[in-house]
Amino acid sequence: METITLGRVEVGRVRELQGPFAPAGDLVPDAPREHWEELGPDFWQPQDNVAVLALQTWVLRSGGRTILVDTGLGTDRFPMETEPRPDLPGLLAAAGVHPEAVDLVINTHLHGDHVGWNTTDGAPTFPNARYLIPAPDNAKLSGDDLHTKAVAPIIEAGLAEVWEGEFRIDADLVLEAAPGHTPGSAVLRLDSGSDRAVFVGDLLHSPVQLLEPAHNSCFDEDPAGAARSRKTVLARAADENRLVFPAHFGGAGYVALSRRPGGSGRNPATQVEEFVL
Image 1: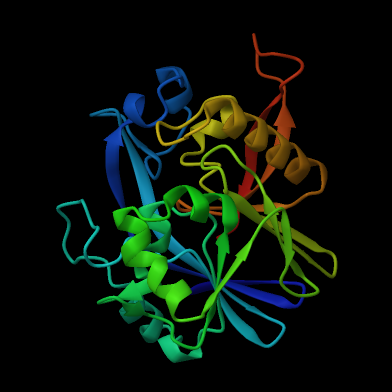
Image 2 (image 1 turned 135 degrees about the horizontal axis):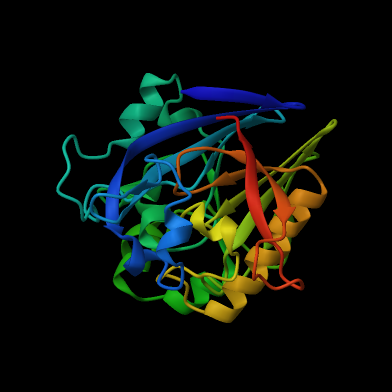
């Protein structure tokens, strides 16, 4: 597990997989090819114009607790013909994080690739953890298949804390609503000592969206709302020198505001200044 220490918080990454995912034009339909051409091979394959995505979970040690940010796809929701198949509990255990040792699970939103390992065979995968679940997503999805398999068992076991608006986890970590991708999408803000970071969930699927934050992914349920949240969070990250941790591309980085030729002066793009993990 790759780690970095930010103030009093240790941040680690457990990556289940990284590879070609979908045609670039399908993933972020508004992004022109010339923007994709600015990305390296870790994010885009030029020979077939395919976006490269990662599936990863962030592991935080904060305030004496072990915290997971999102839990991947799980065993019965994996759509890609890839071997070996993802095994988040196994990868966590190999990194010294056993399921019983997890104290808190954060679901940044309730899409299937962020809640899959909430459960294993219908039971909570992390039996001693509290699970933080965004109320707007919980209300919207209640009763559907994903909710039944990956969220309802957590609630029925009395392990869920359903929250809305803002939720302080400890002195260094705060969850904040950032709706658009889903009604309950959230970001996790880290302020510890002199260090600043933000875990943005699915506000970003590819660094191509840093070049033009108005460009949405095909998975954004409210495109206008997602673009608003993305611009707000990225502008704050640039202004406050926050390290940006995405859900689906391999690398956390600092971003800076920039003015792209022909771009809108009201909506400056961002660019990665440095990848650090």
